[in-house]
Length: 595
Image 1 (cartoon, helix red, strand yellow):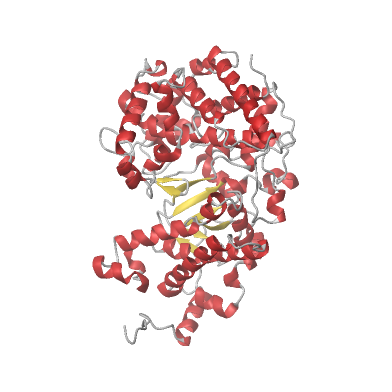
Image 2 (tube, rainbow, N blue to C red; image 1 turned 180 degrees about the horizontal axis):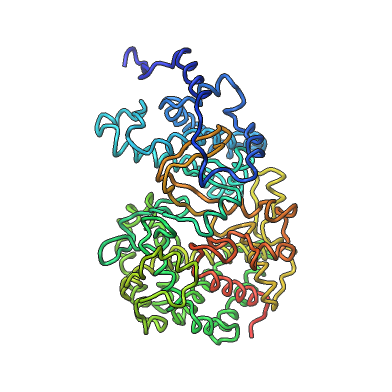
């Protein structure tokens, strides 16, 4: 400090340095692209890269594309902080022109592409020590906290639209995925992760590609301390277990899938979920009465969140999988199950950013409720005859391949239930409920794209359209309606895995070839593949469940719902058919098709 002014820690690069960097860029020859090379739309992606603001000025582009920590990390970090704040605040300005807001949104996304690129390509302390983190460097050196802070900041910077769009209601959650693809092509950064948005690559990886998800759950990183463990203390959370032909896969993922099919989603479960079963009939009747009451409120311009969807899904998940009739709403089992369906604190305890805080503040509540869930599942009728899986008899060919040449892991009943509890909390209850809320809100006319959206974004239907005639009573057509709703407005936007080895991307966000190291998190976007003209033709962005029937279901299906390609894929949700039946029963209940 001198005279009250800050002195820059690093001098600007000289003209000779910039020239040398340009020369290096020209001479650089990227390694031969491997698994993650671009699909058929490579040329189209390059032509769209003009929307990248860093490409608008060639003299600036050469400087920003140099790979020193100043231009690759420090400048994007500083710029992103101001654009993040500006993006959040400007939406509150009265009369803010939508084109101006969208231009600022594109600017923020473009800066994030630079910051994410640096963070993904430099996953270790060797990245250098940016001056704005000097305080951390002085205390801890350029490691540990420094890397954690940069990685967390890149995640938060890339997810700022979840605050502006979802949190503040400025746009539907899908829009940021579509905007990034339009601006940067089909390979870009989202929440600090390398994102694939084209169908050929996504389908190839989902069908039978080796996948190690590490501690990622979608864009979020999981809180390891909250996750279940096997008796030997190895990771056992089924949603993040490695699958396919990779060294990390010891057969645990396939063992869980096969055990789930053997004990929870079997013929007895399908019998319980018959449309005329008394428990199902009672739940549909409850749904019908609650929907009619909510529809009356909507007609008067009142009403809120469709709470009846939570109740219906909680009942059906526990009845279908475990044979548990939760009974009266005041009962302890029903209250515990409803608690598990609420994101706070049930889901947030498992996330890295929120888990430590939520776990400390709600420790007593979490311990009590989770223990009750554990006891409910341990004593459930469905698991009364539980026995560890001993062989692969009865497993599908895909499941056998997922064992990766290993025998089934002998998982005790206690270990299996420890795996089930967080899987039910995070996926089993949240996924169907999210889809159900979309369907009910659309039926009530409460879906809104948001004020800060373009005409093209407003034209993408918030599914199904309010005037759509639901085919109540026709289960085959209702299946297509549900899948089409998932296609255009997915309940789960993405999945994430880690690169098994270094890979080259032919064109990252319009910046040309880039190499990403082993362990780099890769996000597969279902939002983008769901509206791919390559698969769904010129009507890809229109609501047409019957016209898209072939692509949605059957042997030629290419729809990416439930973490698969149609019904195929090693990571396809084991509760896929239960979720479909639940939604069919829910819609039939709404339509009065109860008996």
